[in-house]
Length: 350
Image (cartoon, rainbow, N blue to C red; front, side, top):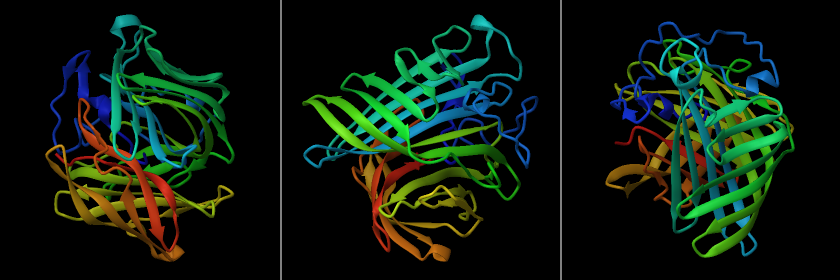
């Protein structure tokens, strides 16, 4: 995400949940003594930076997809691998401080299927290799000869998917050349995306196999303290418009009722313009009760400098990720001054 999900910091040991507070989501707003801290003017090194960065506390490989079946039915897909370090040291085997967490989901117009996996670092159960690229946890994997051509698999009790991803555009960098600021106090992450994947493959659902085609968006982010102590949650949007342009935008909700926002406007050719705090605007229009929580599932999104004024609506308002720490994540439709599809992630609606 953009800020993307935090969930790895929820485990202080294998099977021992950390208390999750509204503030900082299990520690993302706390100090990160001993860990590396993102700094301005990053120098990315590919393919090495597609791999893991164990000297930073948290990291994720986060893919979402908007797909269509042969009959026109719309589907959403999520595959995420999170890494979190319990301490700023490197050891091997069961002594490794690295914790891994995998999330997978498929969303249909009437159902939302999810699954979750946990692993301890150093055992081979989960990990990431930059070249040839492979990210895995148990039998879930994302792998390919390069980061641009990947095979993706995951399964849960009621679903599985096996799809191929092919990048049709460049990797793009958010913030200042990949240095993405998340608060007025200066918390930040390193953040880039591959938002130009074409997708084709098969979903297996309770009603049978479904051939799908569509587009996918991968986020890569790592940091050690990406939230400020007064930030209580975020709303993150990745939108793809029919003319080929794209928008990543998020707002971080603060305890005093204000917001810190950031975003990136991405042209169809992959050129980017950062959207500074206040340039991206997202306001809830409709609230839905989801698993006993009130969650905004229809939004008005505006970016005045691009004459963007759209309504972003959940394709399935009940797309709740009922995981170790719950959050909302699902496909959306876009209508208004532009049309398209995308994904929305919302945290902190407890």
